[in-house]
Image (cartoon, rainbow, N blue to C red; front, side, top):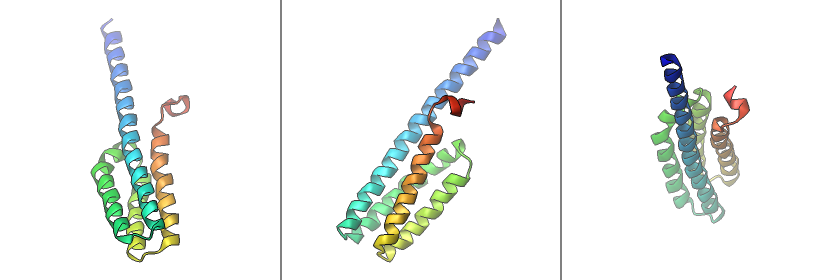
Length: 126
């Protein structure tokens, strides 16, 4: 009986941690995607100073949360995002519209894939 209660408690704890990690990841990815979309609006209006500020804001959000995200993922995806952020900053410094769009779309895809990998589904559980 004691073993069953301990097993149920551990199972409930695991479920709580999974829900927490998903909600946390959802919140972070939503903020990151919103920042990228805001950045794209500034690029279309050719406001590169605001693009630089928003790119720095994106990097700050990522840096604050990347260590926590790396606990839930293999390091490959977050490391690729780190590299892409550096590339995006270089593109912004050069005011390159075409490369910015490509890099921003890559970052969006990578960030959203983090969220998709955390979704609670039968495939992700087993």
